[in-house]
Length: 197
Image (cartoon, rainbow, N blue to C red; front, side):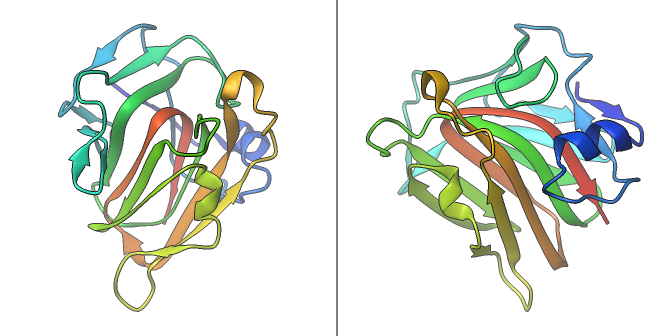
């Protein structure tokens, strides 16, 4: 299961220097995960303040490559944090906090494809946005409902594109509170997920 990192202020400050988070924000990394552990699609994983559900990746209502998908712990650090990290192929990762949070930040790496045509999606409080290509297309986008939909900030300071991977930091925030957040892509790495109230 996902291991909480209690008040990971130092690591978080270094990792998310361009995406400020309160020093006491609860964070989750994957340091106690066993490499090569695989979580099945539709698995639910408790994470202390909520749970994570692994979902199929969908684009325009159709599942993307249903015969070729997985969510696995990898002893790597392509997303830019410390190993291990989570690697998903053709899946969407849904985060459900026990109570609404104001901000979620995370490190990611993904492969939008040489032609920028690979599927990607996010969901905030049940409202979906899907597209093809880079996660950077989310920068500045509002997703959600109510008076204050979630605003996305995406920075790609480490986007050298080595081996097709484009790495960056994602932040979403809403004054209405984030009760559900999902992120999915054809090729996706995640690490250092933090929540702030």
